[in-house]
Structures are given as structure tokens and as C-alpha cells.
Length: 448
Ligand SMILES: Nc1ncnc2c1ncn2[C@@H]1O[C@H](COP(=O)(O)OP(=O)(O)OP(=O)(O)O)[C@@H](O)[C@H]1O
Ligand SMILES: [Mg+2]
Image (cartoon, rainbow, N blue to C red; front, side, top):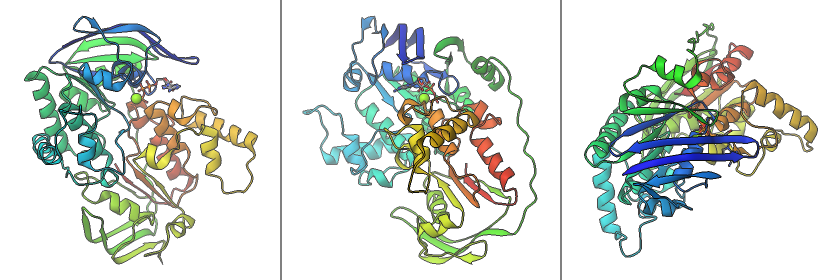
């Protein structure tokens, strides 16, 4: 397959998300799509995969104009996209989602589909059980399922928008080996949108760079991180240093805590976190990190052991008791558990207010201040789904209360560009630093 973008333009109101983009992609290549948050990467990929129409311009597949008015038509033309935020449907199972979109007549029966899921999962090193419900999967697992579904539909161009969130280094190795195979052996075009430059360096044959909706660079790999950063931001970035904070008394204690859900059990977990401490969680996706983080916020109750906050035993208490004790939790599933589609940024901030009456003018001003502070590309009137993925993430951080006792962040840098993720650029790191500064003897606890 050969894909050719010809003079693609797309605007949203006054935002020029894609400006006159022309580009040719050849079979068997893995191409990185780079650019800062809001550069227009997802927009271009959505146009290619039929999720959005271009205002003007054309895409040719093997020289033939693609008229992909919708994702199904794009899949029929051999183009499939894993969205930045998975689109699978919660009440259903892995198996039901896997067969979604298969043409009637060619649809696998349940037994065949379950077999295919197991085979493919083994090939990619994915951990998926056909009978699991989507709601019991992590974000990483949901992305894995979507990749398998698209490949089963026979796509020849596979677009991955931020696919490596929440998967471990080992799983990533297996996924990357499988993607290389798909490109080299089966001639797939793989398009990887990622802010993780080490992934881009490990995987891609070529990178294209967008800035402010314009294609500003196209180069063959290999390239160093510094070269890619310079291509993306037009300048080198200075690394951020971390100030040291003196540790205070015990803020959170897990005493022999046992936590269970259907898939995983955390047995007799003991941990002490002191004021001022930052704890990172590593490990294979689905090893129980989610359970521990939710237990910190009172969202999961232990079946044994004790949880103490500032020395006070809150074991088994309602999550409101945790909240009243200054625990703030932000979930990795920003679209499902954090943000509300259809609401504006001002409305989001207003919802976090506890008062019975809302002073909309004051809320608007507060929102404008937060937008500036967290460097969000959007206005108080923007609806949340109009923001790019990374800007949604920044705004999620802007919604967190100012003076938490315990900040529990799940994948806080998900989808943030390296500038905002590593440098103080008013993003998540800044939020963390602010929390550290405004309550420098308070703990911060996170899974990275
Ligand atoms: N549905 C929409 N309505 C209005 N504006 C939109 C919409 N979708 C995208 N935009 C705007 O278009 C610009 C490009 O967004 P896009 O999602 O393509 O960025 P991105 O490069 O994928 O960024 P990120 O790295 O944060 O995911 C942004 O300014 C965004 O706010
Ligand atoms: Mg995006």
C-alpha cells in the first residue's frame, strides 16, 4: 500500500489544525508522527481514518482517491486507527468488542473468536481474556484489544495514537517486535503518534513533525532525542532539576492490607509514606497498582489490614471520609472518570465547587486563570472534547484542588509532550511541584 496526503486542510473555528499537509507513506514503513500538544497530529490521523472530514485536500490509497466518509469505509480501504482514548464499549466483553465491525457472513463464531484472541494475545504478549468485561480492563489492555481487533479486520495501515500508555517495558518490547514484523513481513504501514521519544527512536524508520498544524519536518531515522526535540520545538530544552524537600511525619500507612478484584490480589501490602515524599509505582500493567491507588482514595475497600491517614484509621470508610481528609485522586481514564464530554472548561471548574450557587462570571475568570497557569490551549468556552489529548490532560491537572494532603495521580503525564512533561511548562510536573511547594511537608503519591 502507498498513502499520499495531498494539501490537507482542516480548521476548527479560528484554529488551523492542519495546514496544507502533503506527505507520502510507503508500505513496510513505521512512521512516527511527532509534534507538541495541539500540533494537529490526531486531527490528521482522524482524517485519514475517516473519523473526521478534511476541509480540502485529498488522500490517495495506491493512487486512488480515498472517500472515507466514516471509519468503516476507511477500514474497508485498509486503514484502521487506535484512538488516543479507546472507543470500546464498556458493558460488553473482550470477545464482543473483538468481533465488532466484522462483516456479517465473515464474522467469527464465539469459539473461533476466543481462539483468535488467545492466539493473537500470545503473539503480541498481551494479557487478555475473551470473557473479561471492558470495564475490568486497564487503559493499556483496552488499547491492546483495539489493536488486535483492527488487525483481525485486515487493515494495511495501522494508526496508533499514544499506544504505549500503561504498558510495561517488557510488554512494550513484545508489542514493538510484533509491529516490526507486521511492517517488514506483511508490508503494513504503521503510523505511531507518540510523545515518548524513546519509543519513536526504538521503532520508527522515519518521522514527520507537525508544529501549529504545519508539517515542518520529515526525516529518516536514526536520530537522537535531542535532534527530535529540536525538530519538534525549534530549540533544545533544558532539563529540569528537582528540589529536595525535607520529609515530615507519617502521612499514609498501609498495614498488611489485602485488596482484591476479579483479576488480581494484593496480599498483605505494607507501606509508609511521609509528608513531602513522592512515591512512584512501577511494574507490569494490571499487577495491582490500580487497586492500591484506589484504596488510597477510599474507592476500594481492603478485605484485611488497615489504612491510616495522618495516624487516623480510615479502613473501610466511605471515600468521602478520605476526601475530607485531603486525599485527591486523578484517574488515568481521563475521558471516563475525569472529564465530562459536552461540558465547557468553565462548567468543569464550576462542578468542582461545593457551593449551592454558581457565580458564572467568577467561574469564568477562575477558568481563564487556570488555563493560563497550566498552559492549556483552549478558552473557558471550549467544550472539553475540542481540546487535544495533551491539553485535556493539562486541564485535568488544573481541576485538582489547590492544597491536597495526599495527591494520588494515575498516569499523570499521559499524552503530555516532553516540554510540558519534563519541564516546568505549567503542566503536570508543575502541578506536582506546586503541590510540593504549597504544602511542602505533605506527601505526593503517584504511579508513573
Ligand atoms: N473537535 C474539535 N473542535 C474544535 N477544535 C478541535 C477539535 N479537535 C481538535 N481541535 C483543535 O485542533 C488543534 C489540534 O488538535 P489535535 O487533537 O490534532 O492535536 P494533537 O497534535 O493530537 O495534540 P496532543 O499531543 O495533545 O494529542 C487543537 O488546537 C485542538 O484544540
Ligand atoms: Mg492527539
